[in-house]
Image (cartoon, rainbow, N blue to C red; front, side, top):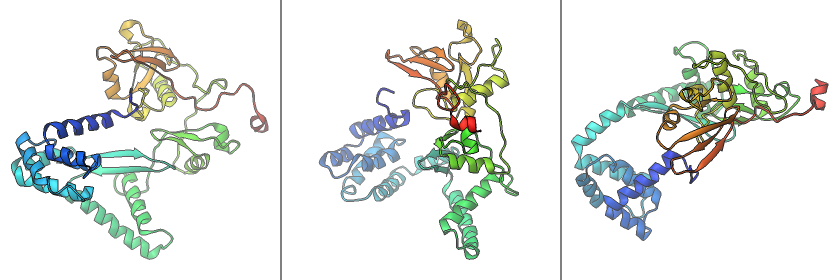
Length: 339
Protein backbone atom coordinates (compact mmCIF):
# COMPACT_ATOMS: atom_id res chain seq x y z
CA UNK A 1 0.00 0.00 0.00
CA UNK A 2 2.92 2.39 0.72
CA UNK A 3 3.97 2.52 -2.95
CA UNK A 4 0.42 2.60 -4.34
CA UNK A 5 0.98 -0.46 -6.52
CA UNK A 6 -1.05 -3.63 -6.44
CA UNK A 7 0.17 -6.62 -4.48
CA UNK A 8 0.55 -8.59 -7.70
CA UNK A 9 2.68 -5.84 -9.28
CA UNK A 10 4.93 -5.59 -6.24
CA UNK A 11 5.38 -9.37 -6.10
CA UNK A 12 6.19 -9.48 -9.82
CA UNK A 13 8.88 -6.80 -9.57
CA UNK A 14 10.46 -8.52 -6.58
CA UNK A 15 10.37 -11.89 -8.34
CA UNK A 16 12.04 -10.51 -11.49
CA UNK A 17 14.77 -8.80 -9.47
CA UNK A 18 15.60 -11.87 -7.39
CA UNK A 19 15.69 -14.16 -10.44
CA UNK A 20 17.99 -11.86 -12.41
CA UNK A 21 20.46 -11.43 -9.54
CA UNK A 22 20.56 -15.02 -8.34
CA UNK A 23 19.94 -17.23 -11.40
CA UNK A 24 20.18 -15.38 -14.71
CA UNK A 25 23.53 -13.53 -14.92
CA UNK A 26 23.58 -13.32 -18.73
CA UNK A 27 20.10 -11.84 -18.85
CA UNK A 28 21.04 -9.38 -16.11
CA UNK A 29 24.15 -8.40 -18.06
CA UNK A 30 22.05 -7.75 -21.16
CA UNK A 31 19.76 -5.56 -19.07
CA UNK A 32 22.74 -3.64 -17.65
CA UNK A 33 24.12 -3.06 -21.14
CA UNK A 34 20.79 -1.73 -22.38
CA UNK A 35 20.39 -4.58 -24.89
CA UNK A 36 17.01 -5.41 -23.35
CA UNK A 37 14.61 -3.60 -21.05
CA UNK A 38 12.91 -4.91 -17.92
CA UNK A 39 9.86 -6.07 -19.85
CA UNK A 40 11.99 -8.26 -22.14
CA UNK A 41 13.96 -9.55 -19.16
CA UNK A 42 10.67 -10.56 -17.54
CA UNK A 43 10.02 -12.94 -20.46
CA UNK A 44 13.05 -14.93 -19.36
CA UNK A 45 12.23 -14.85 -15.65
CA UNK A 46 8.58 -15.81 -16.12
CA UNK A 47 9.29 -19.00 -18.05
CA UNK A 48 12.16 -20.10 -15.77
CA UNK A 49 10.49 -19.38 -12.43
CA UNK A 50 9.54 -23.05 -11.87
CA UNK A 51 12.69 -24.79 -13.17
CA UNK A 52 15.72 -25.86 -11.15
CA UNK A 53 18.77 -23.64 -10.82
CA UNK A 54 20.64 -25.98 -13.16
CA UNK A 55 18.03 -25.71 -15.90
CA UNK A 56 17.76 -21.94 -15.38
CA UNK A 57 21.53 -21.66 -15.92
CA UNK A 58 21.28 -23.68 -19.13
CA UNK A 59 18.45 -21.53 -20.43
CA UNK A 60 20.29 -18.35 -19.46
CA UNK A 61 23.40 -19.51 -21.35
CA UNK A 62 21.29 -20.52 -24.35
CA UNK A 63 19.67 -17.08 -24.42
CA UNK A 64 22.88 -15.08 -23.96
CA UNK A 65 23.20 -14.37 -27.70
CA UNK A 66 19.47 -14.43 -28.42
CA UNK A 67 18.34 -11.35 -26.49
CA UNK A 68 19.72 -8.27 -28.23
CA UNK A 69 17.64 -6.66 -30.98
CA UNK A 70 14.74 -9.08 -30.60
CA UNK A 71 11.14 -8.30 -29.72
CA UNK A 72 9.48 -9.66 -26.55
CA UNK A 73 7.44 -12.31 -28.39
CA UNK A 74 10.57 -13.68 -30.10
CA UNK A 75 12.43 -13.79 -26.79
CA UNK A 76 9.56 -15.58 -25.12
CA UNK A 77 9.44 -18.14 -27.94
CA UNK A 78 13.15 -18.89 -27.62
CA UNK A 79 12.94 -19.23 -23.84
CA UNK A 80 9.97 -21.56 -24.17
CA UNK A 81 11.94 -23.68 -26.63
CA UNK A 82 14.98 -23.78 -24.34
CA UNK A 83 12.95 -24.79 -21.29
CA UNK A 84 11.38 -27.69 -23.19
CA UNK A 85 14.78 -28.67 -24.60
CA UNK A 86 16.63 -28.75 -21.26
CA UNK A 87 13.78 -29.91 -19.01
CA UNK A 88 11.30 -32.03 -21.02
CA UNK A 89 10.01 -34.09 -18.10
CA UNK A 90 9.61 -31.09 -15.84
CA UNK A 91 7.85 -29.19 -18.60
CA UNK A 92 5.35 -32.02 -18.99
CA UNK A 93 4.59 -32.07 -15.26
CA UNK A 94 4.17 -28.31 -15.07
CA UNK A 95 1.93 -28.32 -18.12
CA UNK A 96 -0.37 -30.86 -16.45
CA UNK A 97 -0.60 -28.70 -13.32
CA UNK A 98 -1.29 -25.54 -15.27
CA UNK A 99 -4.01 -27.18 -17.32
CA UNK A 100 -5.72 -27.93 -14.02
CA UNK A 101 -5.63 -24.19 -13.20
CA UNK A 102 -7.85 -23.15 -16.09
CA UNK A 103 -9.91 -20.10 -15.19
CA UNK A 104 -11.80 -17.05 -16.41
CA UNK A 105 -10.73 -13.51 -15.46
CA UNK A 106 -12.22 -10.05 -15.79
CA UNK A 107 -10.27 -6.81 -16.30
CA UNK A 108 -12.08 -3.48 -16.37
CA UNK A 109 -10.90 -0.78 -18.76
CA UNK A 110 -11.92 2.76 -19.73
CA UNK A 111 -14.95 4.18 -21.57
CA UNK A 112 -17.41 1.49 -20.36
CA UNK A 113 -15.35 -1.44 -21.68
CA UNK A 114 -13.87 -4.55 -20.04
CA UNK A 115 -11.86 -7.59 -21.08
CA UNK A 116 -13.19 -11.05 -20.21
CA UNK A 117 -10.60 -13.74 -20.86
CA UNK A 118 -10.27 -17.47 -20.37
CA UNK A 119 -7.03 -19.20 -19.38
CA UNK A 120 -7.55 -22.53 -21.13
CA UNK A 121 -5.60 -25.40 -22.68
CA UNK A 122 -4.29 -24.23 -26.04
CA UNK A 123 -6.28 -26.70 -28.12
CA UNK A 124 -9.53 -25.82 -26.30
CA UNK A 125 -8.99 -22.08 -26.68
CA UNK A 126 -8.12 -22.52 -30.35
CA UNK A 127 -11.27 -24.55 -30.99
CA UNK A 128 -13.48 -21.98 -29.26
CA UNK A 129 -11.98 -19.13 -31.24
CA UNK A 130 -12.33 -21.00 -34.52
CA UNK A 131 -15.96 -21.83 -33.76
CA UNK A 132 -16.78 -18.20 -32.96
CA UNK A 133 -14.96 -17.06 -36.08
CA UNK A 134 -16.97 -19.39 -38.32
CA UNK A 135 -20.23 -18.15 -36.79
CA UNK A 136 -19.10 -14.53 -37.14
CA UNK A 137 -18.16 -14.99 -40.79
CA UNK A 138 -21.60 -16.46 -41.50
CA UNK A 139 -23.31 -13.53 -39.81
CA UNK A 140 -21.08 -11.04 -41.58
CA UNK A 141 -22.31 -12.26 -44.97
CA UNK A 142 -25.88 -11.34 -44.02
CA UNK A 143 -25.15 -8.27 -41.88
CA UNK A 144 -22.52 -5.83 -43.14
CA UNK A 145 -23.44 -3.19 -40.54
CA UNK A 146 -21.05 -4.83 -38.05
CA UNK A 147 -17.42 -5.75 -38.56
CA UNK A 148 -16.19 -9.31 -38.30
CA UNK A 149 -14.65 -8.51 -34.90
CA UNK A 150 -17.96 -7.09 -33.68
CA UNK A 151 -19.84 -10.17 -34.83
CA UNK A 152 -17.27 -12.41 -33.14
CA UNK A 153 -17.60 -10.47 -29.87
CA UNK A 154 -21.41 -10.63 -30.06
CA UNK A 155 -21.33 -14.40 -30.64
CA UNK A 156 -19.00 -14.74 -27.64
CA UNK A 157 -21.35 -12.74 -25.38
CA UNK A 158 -24.50 -14.49 -26.56
CA UNK A 159 -23.08 -17.96 -26.03
CA UNK A 160 -21.92 -17.17 -22.51
CA UNK A 161 -25.05 -15.34 -21.37
CA UNK A 162 -27.28 -18.20 -22.54
CA UNK A 163 -26.20 -20.38 -19.61
CA UNK A 164 -27.38 -23.65 -21.11
CA UNK A 165 -25.93 -22.77 -24.50
CA UNK A 166 -29.45 -22.30 -25.81
CA UNK A 167 -32.13 -19.66 -25.47
CA UNK A 168 -31.98 -15.91 -24.89
CA UNK A 169 -29.28 -14.25 -22.77
CA UNK A 170 -30.31 -13.48 -19.18
CA UNK A 171 -27.88 -10.86 -17.84
CA UNK A 172 -27.66 -10.20 -14.10
CA UNK A 173 -25.56 -7.22 -13.01
CA UNK A 174 -25.60 -4.73 -10.15
CA UNK A 175 -26.01 -1.05 -11.02
CA UNK A 176 -26.43 1.72 -8.46
CA UNK A 177 -28.09 4.86 -9.80
CA UNK A 178 -29.74 7.97 -8.43
CA UNK A 179 -33.45 8.08 -9.25
CA UNK A 180 -33.11 11.53 -10.82
CA UNK A 181 -30.36 10.26 -13.11
CA UNK A 182 -32.45 7.23 -14.00
CA UNK A 183 -35.39 9.41 -15.03
CA UNK A 184 -33.15 11.75 -17.03
CA UNK A 185 -33.58 14.77 -14.72
CA UNK A 186 -29.88 14.54 -13.86
CA UNK A 187 -26.85 13.37 -15.83
CA UNK A 188 -24.68 12.20 -12.95
CA UNK A 189 -22.66 9.01 -13.44
CA UNK A 190 -24.04 5.78 -11.96
CA UNK A 191 -21.99 2.93 -10.48
CA UNK A 192 -21.55 -0.51 -12.04
CA UNK A 193 -20.48 -3.07 -9.43
CA UNK A 194 -16.90 -4.19 -9.95
CA UNK A 195 -16.28 -1.59 -12.66
CA UNK A 196 -16.93 1.85 -11.23
CA UNK A 197 -18.65 4.96 -12.64
CA UNK A 198 -20.63 4.59 -15.86
CA UNK A 199 -22.38 7.42 -17.80
CA UNK A 200 -26.05 8.25 -17.35
CA UNK A 201 -26.97 7.23 -20.91
CA UNK A 202 -25.56 3.74 -20.42
CA UNK A 203 -27.41 3.09 -17.18
CA UNK A 204 -30.69 4.11 -18.82
CA UNK A 205 -29.98 1.67 -21.66
CA UNK A 206 -29.38 -1.09 -19.12
CA UNK A 207 -32.54 -0.18 -17.22
CA UNK A 208 -34.60 -0.29 -20.42
CA UNK A 209 -33.69 -3.94 -21.07
CA UNK A 210 -36.82 -6.11 -20.66
CA UNK A 211 -34.94 -8.60 -18.46
CA UNK A 212 -33.67 -5.98 -15.97
CA UNK A 213 -34.80 -6.34 -12.36
CA UNK A 214 -35.01 -3.67 -9.65
CA UNK A 215 -34.32 -3.25 -5.94
CA UNK A 216 -35.11 -0.04 -4.07
CA UNK A 217 -32.39 1.53 -1.89
CA UNK A 218 -33.28 4.41 0.42
CA UNK A 219 -30.52 6.94 1.04
CA UNK A 220 -30.00 9.80 3.46
CA UNK A 221 -30.30 12.98 1.33
CA UNK A 222 -27.76 14.80 3.53
CA UNK A 223 -24.99 12.24 3.08
CA UNK A 224 -25.87 10.08 0.09
CA UNK A 225 -25.33 6.97 2.23
CA UNK A 226 -27.78 4.14 2.80
CA UNK A 227 -29.89 4.31 5.97
CA UNK A 228 -29.21 2.14 9.01
CA UNK A 229 -30.74 -1.32 9.47
CA UNK A 230 -29.95 -4.55 11.29
CA UNK A 231 -30.47 -6.22 14.70
CA UNK A 232 -27.94 -7.13 17.39
CA UNK A 233 -27.06 -10.66 16.21
CA UNK A 234 -23.79 -12.36 15.30
CA UNK A 235 -24.61 -13.30 11.74
CA UNK A 236 -25.58 -10.51 9.44
CA UNK A 237 -29.25 -10.93 8.41
CA UNK A 238 -29.87 -11.18 4.70
CA UNK A 239 -31.46 -7.71 4.60
CA UNK A 240 -28.47 -6.10 6.37
CA UNK A 241 -25.98 -8.02 4.22
CA UNK A 242 -27.72 -6.74 1.08
CA UNK A 243 -27.59 -3.19 2.43
CA UNK A 244 -23.85 -3.43 3.21
CA UNK A 245 -23.04 -4.90 -0.21
CA UNK A 246 -25.05 -2.17 -1.90
CA UNK A 247 -23.35 0.53 0.19
CA UNK A 248 -19.76 -0.71 -0.17
CA UNK A 249 -19.96 -1.93 -3.80
CA UNK A 250 -16.35 -3.17 -3.52
CA UNK A 251 -13.99 -4.79 -1.04
CA UNK A 252 -13.23 -2.00 1.44
CA UNK A 253 -9.50 -2.77 1.75
CA UNK A 254 -7.46 0.10 0.20
CA UNK A 255 -6.50 -0.71 -3.37
CA UNK A 256 -8.84 -3.72 -3.71
CA UNK A 257 -11.74 -3.45 -6.15
CA UNK A 258 -13.30 -6.91 -5.99
CA UNK A 259 -17.09 -6.48 -6.27
CA UNK A 260 -18.89 -6.64 -2.92
CA UNK A 261 -21.35 -9.25 -4.15
CA UNK A 262 -18.39 -11.67 -4.37
CA UNK A 263 -16.98 -10.60 -0.99
CA UNK A 264 -17.66 -11.64 2.60
CA UNK A 265 -19.67 -9.55 5.05
CA UNK A 266 -17.89 -9.40 8.39
CA UNK A 267 -17.31 -7.28 11.49
CA UNK A 268 -14.69 -4.53 11.51
CA UNK A 269 -14.33 -4.94 15.28
CA UNK A 270 -14.71 -8.66 15.92
CA UNK A 271 -17.80 -9.89 17.71
CA UNK A 272 -15.48 -11.52 20.26
CA UNK A 273 -14.24 -8.00 21.13
CA UNK A 274 -17.80 -6.69 21.56
CA UNK A 275 -18.16 -5.56 17.97
CA UNK A 276 -21.77 -4.86 17.03
CA UNK A 277 -23.64 -6.46 14.17
CA UNK A 278 -24.85 -3.33 12.46
CA UNK A 279 -24.08 -1.31 9.35
CA UNK A 280 -21.51 0.84 11.23
CA UNK A 281 -19.37 -2.17 12.16
CA UNK A 282 -20.11 -4.30 9.10
CA UNK A 283 -18.27 -4.16 5.80
CA UNK A 284 -17.53 -6.14 2.66
CA UNK A 285 -14.09 -7.75 2.49
CA UNK A 286 -12.81 -10.17 -0.14
CA UNK A 287 -11.64 -13.49 1.29
CA UNK A 288 -7.93 -12.67 1.06
CA UNK A 289 -8.19 -9.38 2.95
CA UNK A 290 -10.67 -10.82 5.43
CA UNK A 291 -8.01 -13.40 6.37
CA UNK A 292 -5.23 -10.80 6.29
CA UNK A 293 -6.85 -8.62 8.96
CA UNK A 294 -6.50 -11.50 11.44
CA UNK A 295 -2.74 -11.67 10.96
CA UNK A 296 -0.50 -10.28 13.75
CA UNK A 297 0.08 -6.55 13.53
CA UNK A 298 -3.07 -5.74 11.56
CA UNK A 299 -5.96 -3.88 13.21
CA UNK A 300 -9.01 -1.87 12.18
CA UNK A 301 -11.20 0.62 14.02
CA UNK A 302 -14.68 1.52 12.73
CA UNK A 303 -15.42 5.19 12.06
CA UNK A 304 -19.10 4.73 11.25
CA UNK A 305 -21.22 3.64 8.30
CA UNK A 306 -18.68 1.07 7.12
CA UNK A 307 -15.67 3.39 7.35
CA UNK A 308 -12.54 2.36 9.24
CA UNK A 309 -8.94 3.20 10.09
CA UNK A 310 -6.57 0.35 9.21
CA UNK A 311 -3.21 -0.04 10.97
CA UNK A 312 -0.59 -2.23 9.28
CA UNK A 313 2.24 -4.18 10.95
CA UNK A 314 4.61 -1.34 9.97
CA UNK A 315 2.51 1.13 11.98
CA UNK A 316 1.13 3.01 8.98
CA UNK A 317 -2.55 3.92 9.02
CA UNK A 318 -5.07 4.20 6.19
CA UNK A 319 -8.57 5.62 6.24
CA UNK A 320 -11.26 4.09 4.07
CA UNK A 321 -15.01 4.69 3.76
CA UNK A 322 -17.72 3.79 1.24
CA UNK A 323 -18.41 6.41 -1.38
CA UNK A 324 -21.94 7.89 -1.14
CA UNK A 325 -24.42 6.73 -3.75
CA UNK A 326 -25.07 10.34 -4.74
CA UNK A 327 -23.87 13.83 -3.85
CA UNK A 328 -25.15 15.10 -0.48
CA UNK A 329 -28.21 17.33 -0.73
CA UNK A 330 -29.34 19.77 1.92
CA UNK A 331 -32.56 20.83 0.20
CA UNK A 332 -34.57 19.90 -2.89
CA UNK A 333 -33.16 21.53 -6.01
CA UNK A 334 -35.03 22.73 -9.04
CA UNK A 335 -34.91 19.32 -10.74
CA UNK A 336 -36.46 17.62 -7.72
CA UNK A 337 -39.18 20.27 -7.32
CA UNK A 338 -39.99 19.92 -10.99
CA UNK A 339 -40.25 16.14 -10.64
